[in-house]
Length: 253
Ligand SMILES: [Zn+2]
Image 1: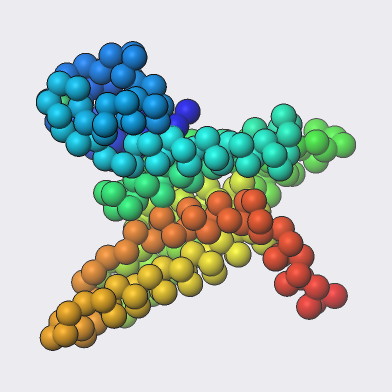
Image 2: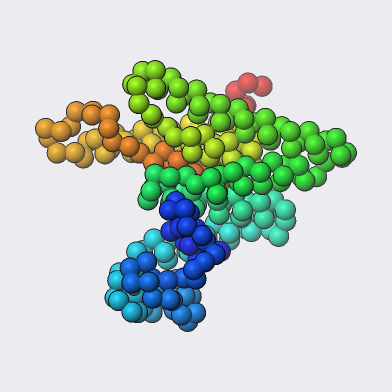
Protein backbone atom coordinates (compact mmCIF):
# COMPACT_ATOMS: atom_id res chain seq x y z
CA UNK A 1 0.00 0.00 0.00
CA UNK A 2 2.91 2.35 0.75
CA UNK A 3 4.44 1.67 -2.67
CA UNK A 4 1.08 2.25 -4.34
CA UNK A 5 0.71 5.50 -2.39
CA UNK A 6 4.10 6.63 -3.76
CA UNK A 7 2.81 6.04 -7.30
CA UNK A 8 -0.32 8.11 -6.50
CA UNK A 9 1.82 10.91 -5.00
CA UNK A 10 4.12 11.01 -8.04
CA UNK A 11 1.36 10.91 -10.67
CA UNK A 12 -1.98 12.28 -9.45
CA UNK A 13 -0.96 15.97 -9.04
CA UNK A 14 0.35 15.78 -12.64
CA UNK A 15 -2.92 14.24 -13.87
CA UNK A 16 -1.26 11.00 -14.98
CA UNK A 17 -2.72 7.49 -14.79
CA UNK A 18 -1.82 5.49 -11.69
CA UNK A 19 -2.26 2.22 -13.64
CA UNK A 20 -0.26 2.72 -16.87
CA UNK A 21 2.59 2.73 -17.57
CA UNK A 22 4.11 0.37 -14.97
CA UNK A 23 6.75 1.59 -12.52
CA UNK A 24 9.58 3.39 -14.30
CA UNK A 25 12.46 5.64 -13.32
CA UNK A 26 11.17 9.27 -13.43
CA UNK A 27 14.59 10.37 -14.73
CA UNK A 28 15.55 7.90 -17.53
CA UNK A 29 12.22 6.06 -18.01
CA UNK A 30 13.79 2.61 -17.58
CA UNK A 31 11.21 0.05 -16.42
CA UNK A 32 11.80 -1.06 -12.83
CA UNK A 33 12.21 -4.85 -12.38
CA UNK A 34 10.03 -6.60 -9.85
CA UNK A 35 13.13 -7.49 -7.80
CA UNK A 36 14.07 -3.77 -7.68
CA UNK A 37 10.55 -2.72 -6.65
CA UNK A 38 10.42 -4.13 -3.11
CA UNK A 39 9.30 -1.55 -0.52
CA UNK A 40 12.15 -0.02 1.56
CA UNK A 41 14.52 -2.99 0.89
CA UNK A 42 15.17 -2.16 -2.78
CA UNK A 43 15.92 1.45 -1.91
CA UNK A 44 18.62 0.27 0.52
CA UNK A 45 19.99 -2.49 -1.78
CA UNK A 46 20.22 -0.10 -4.75
CA UNK A 47 21.98 2.52 -2.60
CA UNK A 48 19.11 4.96 -3.27
CA UNK A 49 20.02 5.13 -6.97
CA UNK A 50 18.34 4.03 -10.22
CA UNK A 51 20.03 0.85 -11.54
CA UNK A 52 20.02 2.21 -15.10
CA UNK A 53 20.99 5.90 -14.82
CA UNK A 54 22.22 6.25 -11.20
CA UNK A 55 19.59 8.98 -10.55
CA UNK A 56 19.22 9.53 -6.81
CA UNK A 57 15.83 8.14 -5.66
CA UNK A 58 14.32 10.66 -3.20
CA UNK A 59 14.08 9.58 0.43
CA UNK A 60 10.37 10.36 0.14
CA UNK A 61 9.85 6.86 -1.33
CA UNK A 62 11.05 4.77 1.65
CA UNK A 63 9.69 7.41 4.08
CA UNK A 64 6.13 7.07 2.70
CA UNK A 65 6.44 3.26 2.76
CA UNK A 66 7.57 3.27 6.41
CA UNK A 67 4.90 5.84 7.40
CA UNK A 68 2.13 3.82 5.69
CA UNK A 69 3.23 0.61 7.42
CA UNK A 70 3.42 2.42 10.80
CA UNK A 71 -0.05 3.99 10.44
CA UNK A 72 -1.63 0.66 9.39
CA UNK A 73 0.04 -1.03 12.36
CA UNK A 74 -1.27 1.72 14.66
CA UNK A 75 -4.80 1.30 13.21
CA UNK A 76 -4.57 -2.44 13.92
CA UNK A 77 -3.18 -2.01 17.45
CA UNK A 78 -5.91 0.48 18.34
CA UNK A 79 -8.89 -1.34 16.83
CA UNK A 80 -7.85 -4.90 15.89
CA UNK A 81 -9.21 -6.48 12.70
CA UNK A 82 -12.50 -4.56 12.86
CA UNK A 83 -14.46 -2.17 10.70
CA UNK A 84 -13.09 0.71 12.82
CA UNK A 85 -9.54 -0.56 12.26
CA UNK A 86 -10.05 -0.81 8.50
CA UNK A 87 -11.57 2.68 8.38
CA UNK A 88 -8.66 4.15 10.36
CA UNK A 89 -6.25 2.53 7.87
CA UNK A 90 -8.15 3.88 4.83
CA UNK A 91 -8.35 7.41 6.29
CA UNK A 92 -4.64 7.29 7.24
CA UNK A 93 -3.75 6.27 3.68
CA UNK A 94 -5.71 9.20 2.22
CA UNK A 95 -4.37 11.76 4.75
CA UNK A 96 -0.73 10.69 4.37
CA UNK A 97 -0.97 10.84 0.57
CA UNK A 98 -2.64 14.26 0.59
CA UNK A 99 -0.13 15.63 3.13
CA UNK A 100 2.83 14.69 0.92
CA UNK A 101 1.15 15.81 -2.32
CA UNK A 102 0.30 19.25 -0.88
CA UNK A 103 3.83 19.68 0.52
CA UNK A 104 5.44 18.71 -2.81
CA UNK A 105 3.11 20.34 -5.33
CA UNK A 106 0.62 22.61 -3.43
CA UNK A 107 -2.14 20.48 -4.94
CA UNK A 108 -4.76 18.36 -3.18
CA UNK A 109 -6.05 16.17 -6.03
CA UNK A 110 -9.81 15.55 -6.33
CA UNK A 111 -8.88 11.92 -7.06
CA UNK A 112 -8.19 11.59 -3.32
CA UNK A 113 -10.48 14.13 -1.64
CA UNK A 114 -13.76 13.40 -3.48
CA UNK A 115 -13.69 9.58 -3.15
CA UNK A 116 -12.52 10.25 0.43
CA UNK A 117 -15.70 12.23 1.18
CA UNK A 118 -17.91 9.50 -0.36
CA UNK A 119 -16.08 6.74 1.55
CA UNK A 120 -16.43 8.68 4.81
CA UNK A 121 -20.19 9.12 4.36
CA UNK A 122 -20.55 5.43 3.36
CA UNK A 123 -18.53 4.30 6.38
CA UNK A 124 -20.67 6.38 8.76
CA UNK A 125 -23.73 4.82 7.10
CA UNK A 126 -22.65 1.21 7.70
CA UNK A 127 -21.62 1.73 11.34
CA UNK A 128 -23.73 -0.43 13.69
CA UNK A 129 -27.19 1.13 14.11
CA UNK A 130 -30.53 -0.31 15.32
CA UNK A 131 -32.67 0.48 12.26
CA UNK A 132 -32.30 1.30 8.58
CA UNK A 133 -33.52 4.84 9.35
CA UNK A 134 -30.70 5.20 11.91
CA UNK A 135 -28.14 4.08 9.29
CA UNK A 136 -29.46 6.71 6.89
CA UNK A 137 -29.46 9.37 9.63
CA UNK A 138 -25.77 8.63 10.35
CA UNK A 139 -24.88 8.96 6.67
CA UNK A 140 -26.91 12.18 6.37
CA UNK A 141 -25.18 13.63 9.47
CA UNK A 142 -21.79 12.83 7.91
CA UNK A 143 -22.80 14.61 4.69
CA UNK A 144 -24.08 17.58 6.73
CA UNK A 145 -20.78 17.99 8.64
CA UNK A 146 -18.82 17.63 5.40
CA UNK A 147 -20.83 20.52 3.92
CA UNK A 148 -20.34 22.62 7.09
CA UNK A 149 -16.57 22.07 6.94
CA UNK A 150 -16.40 23.03 3.26
CA UNK A 151 -18.52 26.12 4.00
CA UNK A 152 -16.16 27.12 6.84
CA UNK A 153 -13.10 27.08 4.55
CA UNK A 154 -15.07 28.76 1.78
CA UNK A 155 -16.08 31.61 4.17
CA UNK A 156 -12.48 32.06 5.36
CA UNK A 157 -11.37 32.16 1.73
CA UNK A 158 -13.98 34.78 0.95
CA UNK A 159 -13.10 37.02 3.94
CA UNK A 160 -9.42 36.71 3.10
CA UNK A 161 -10.13 37.74 -0.47
CA UNK A 162 -12.09 40.79 0.75
CA UNK A 163 -9.15 41.82 2.97
CA UNK A 164 -6.17 41.03 0.75
CA UNK A 165 -7.62 40.77 -2.76
CA UNK A 166 -5.87 37.50 -3.47
CA UNK A 167 -6.47 33.82 -2.82
CA UNK A 168 -5.47 32.42 0.56
CA UNK A 169 -6.67 28.90 1.04
CA UNK A 170 -7.48 26.79 -1.99
CA UNK A 171 -10.70 24.93 -2.77
CA UNK A 172 -8.62 21.77 -2.25
CA UNK A 173 -8.44 22.72 1.45
CA UNK A 174 -12.27 22.97 1.55
CA UNK A 175 -12.65 19.46 0.05
CA UNK A 176 -9.96 18.13 2.40
CA UNK A 177 -11.66 19.47 5.55
CA UNK A 178 -15.01 18.16 4.19
CA UNK A 179 -13.42 14.72 3.88
CA UNK A 180 -12.07 14.92 7.43
CA UNK A 181 -15.49 16.00 8.76
CA UNK A 182 -17.29 13.18 6.90
CA UNK A 183 -15.05 10.63 8.63
CA UNK A 184 -14.42 12.17 12.05
CA UNK A 185 -17.54 14.23 12.83
CA UNK A 186 -17.71 17.81 14.19
CA UNK A 187 -15.73 17.56 17.46
CA UNK A 188 -12.59 15.91 16.07
CA UNK A 189 -12.76 18.09 12.96
CA UNK A 190 -12.85 21.21 15.15
CA UNK A 191 -9.78 19.89 16.97
CA UNK A 192 -8.11 19.18 13.60
CA UNK A 193 -8.77 22.71 12.36
CA UNK A 194 -7.43 24.38 15.53
CA UNK A 195 -4.32 22.17 15.69
CA UNK A 196 -3.66 22.52 11.95
CA UNK A 197 -4.01 26.31 12.01
CA UNK A 198 -1.75 26.63 15.09
CA UNK A 199 0.92 24.37 13.56
CA UNK A 200 0.82 26.29 10.27
CA UNK A 201 1.07 29.63 12.13
CA UNK A 202 4.06 28.48 14.20
CA UNK A 203 5.73 27.11 11.07
CA UNK A 204 5.05 30.36 9.19
CA UNK A 205 6.54 32.52 11.96
CA UNK A 206 9.59 30.23 12.14
CA UNK A 207 10.07 30.60 8.37
CA UNK A 208 9.90 34.40 8.66
CA UNK A 209 12.38 34.41 11.54
CA UNK A 210 14.84 32.32 9.52
CA UNK A 211 14.93 34.81 6.63
CA UNK A 212 18.03 36.95 6.21
CA UNK A 213 17.83 40.58 7.39
CA UNK A 214 16.53 43.06 4.88
CA UNK A 215 13.76 40.81 3.63
CA UNK A 216 12.34 40.02 7.04
CA UNK A 217 9.17 42.06 6.56
CA UNK A 218 5.95 40.22 5.83
CA UNK A 219 5.60 40.27 2.08
CA UNK A 220 2.49 38.11 2.22
CA UNK A 221 3.58 36.25 -0.87
CA UNK A 222 5.03 33.10 0.63
CA UNK A 223 2.65 30.16 0.62
CA UNK A 224 2.34 27.33 3.09
CA UNK A 225 0.89 23.92 2.27
CA UNK A 226 -2.00 24.38 4.74
CA UNK A 227 -3.46 21.03 3.63
CA UNK A 228 -0.36 19.21 4.90
CA UNK A 229 -0.87 20.74 8.35
CA UNK A 230 -4.58 19.80 8.30
CA UNK A 231 -3.69 16.20 7.33
CA UNK A 232 -1.12 15.88 10.11
CA UNK A 233 -3.60 17.34 12.63
CA UNK A 234 -6.34 14.97 11.39
CA UNK A 235 -4.05 11.96 11.87
CA UNK A 236 -3.40 13.15 15.42
CA UNK A 237 -7.14 13.66 16.01
CA UNK A 238 -7.91 10.21 14.55
CA UNK A 239 -5.57 8.34 16.89
CA UNK A 240 -5.31 10.62 19.95
CA UNK A 241 -8.08 13.22 19.70
CA UNK A 242 -10.87 11.53 21.67
CA UNK A 243 -9.41 12.22 25.19
CA UNK A 244 -8.79 15.89 24.26
CA UNK A 245 -12.38 16.32 23.05
CA UNK A 246 -13.69 14.64 26.23
CA UNK A 247 -11.50 16.92 28.40
CA UNK A 248 -12.76 20.02 26.59
CA UNK A 249 -16.39 18.88 26.79
CA UNK A 250 -15.91 18.48 30.57
CA UNK A 251 -15.92 22.28 30.99
CA UNK A 252 -19.53 22.47 29.75
CA UNK A 253 -21.09 19.80 31.97
ZN1 LIG B 1 16.90 5.99 -14.19
